[in-house]
Length: 413
Ligand SMILES: *Cc1c(COP(=O)(O)O)cnc(C)c1O
Image 1 (cartoon, rainbow, N blue to C red):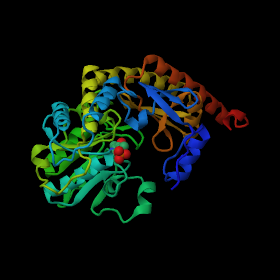
Image 2: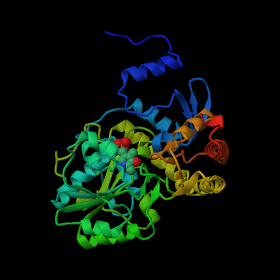
Image 3: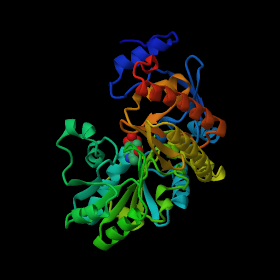
Image 4: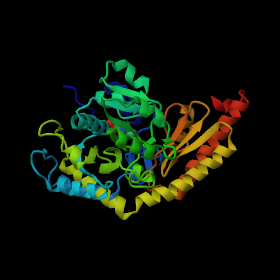
């Protein structure tokens, strides 16, 4: 047996071990994060970062939210696992808290462990309820990487190596009602879209589109599924993304921030639809475990008590306005998009080097495709932290712009 080293590892040893022992599927940054609080992260050397990655949208409440920490601690001493074939107090509490704030009518849930799983459940449910096989998704959509979810995901770099995928998935151009209308057939069970495409570059649904889609699905008797894994839990300034347009889907998928940072996936649907599943037709061993549900209860309490949706709206407005200042200042910036604290800045070239330069200067930013900088900070990010992120980005964009107008400038290397 190979024993792990007993001594504390240094930065390079930690990196080496991950590189050697873990599947090489993440585009890694050479930073070892060891601690987090609210919207601040620290690396192993004590260097501080403003976190605009938010663990890809998971850390919406901020890292180590005190309510979540206390709930996990307390529950860990009480009960950690409890299969769905037995009842549990925390699971019951979580479900009640959940459906108390989901959009009206979406009041029966299946609990799983990730966004992709929430999507898998939605796909199976749509097929079971309608008795039809076909799912219409959009070009540029992202729904996860398990085989069913991947079949709905668009990007061919994710799809092509794994064909054949699940049959009867059709992709149509995004934000185009006519194309969806033309694609709907006798076989169509559901249309699956994100209200704001996250991985697809922070693309907000245009005015009238989602309302039109709702009407179209009603008219054609097709289910409307919203993948709100990234757009829910206050992120966009409303509790759920769909509330920005005043419409409700038939099935909604949730995940990332719902358990305060622990792994969770949730599929919520109209009760009549969720009831299409019979005992045994869908399940997962960890569904609604007590530890996750305790953390989830604390997360929902914090979301409501701290008015985080309103905070996302106001901080997001400020952040977006400051990004727009940069867009006016630099020609290399094409556009700023987003709602609440789900923001994107599209550049005219690959953003990878900008991400690295921002990280060097203490600001962690995400990308969304090749050309878009994506900001998914914890909602508790302070105005000072937004200003710091803007100052750093300003300096980095200036360097990049100079390097591009005067290619001999060495700061570009
Ligand atoms: C992240 C994401 C997923 C996949 O979630 P995982 O937890 O990574 O499986 C699905 N849909 C959307 C919209 C996402 O942003």
